[in-house]
Image (cartoon, one colour):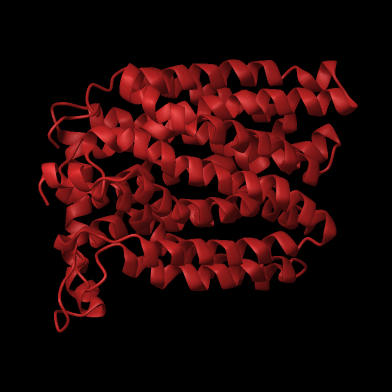
Length: 427
């Protein structure tokens, strides 16, 4: 499909429908990150070990997402190149996620379903995200990613606010509801969003299983070539962008993973209240994910991301003082307001990051570069929880915010060295 045809066929309504995939994924991860660390801590595990277990999804992501992104680029089936992975991963992910709280007293059984659930999620995560640039011209990708992230914000908002209510009724309810919602949302994408015809094959062509077998070497070679390009290219924008993503996710992921535990064990307000407070990050993100895409297109993606990161650092510095100066309802309100603005700032960063990466390559490699984005973010997410947990074990939960601030500030520095990734006309 030519750029002109892609622009003519572009539809914001289609992007909203595609956003249901990210909606379902966000529902799952918001519940997972809020309550699974508490389940593990209740079994008497050290914080660093809890953090290590919470990196299972990220380990699968680093190993599988770049490969699956590249593999989906060369996949051709009757329904397209991204949808087969949704059909492979979403059903088992939903089922095993629903089983997690039912096994919370048995570490071995709970770990088994967590591993299967994380593997299943990894199967379709990168192809779902790569679906967006498939059907979106370059100059519309920040705006389209804003819509996708808006839908993800709605999912997180429901997970945090409704999930905290369901959790108080029964800890299994948010897991059961989220699994069903994610599966339904992904099936909507499969049924209602059509892939470009150039990525389909007619009946009687090579089967999907045969394609996976034959393309293992090709897709892995593509991944290595892309990584080599990042490190050896004379122009280092891709390397610095991936470095920035890596650093800011180290800082942000620690808050996402440990704030409910921080709320329970340091603030003394309980994990359900901590999850409710985290919901204000999702609310702020939801409010600003659409404007963030348009701001990135107008102001420039790098400048917009820099602004967001500086705001997050400032807000975390402010939040560090709350436990000393405030208590009770005042403490909760202060965190809610701060996290609301933090969510707005995170929208400026997160909405514009993926379009920056994929606009450093050609349309044929969109899935592979989406995989590189996840390679950077999920590598950070592997390191962040156990490293943050180690600092917490040594220094207490008061170390959580300073830890995050250091890495977010470093990401601001590397981001200033990025010179490519802005929207390109005619692409």
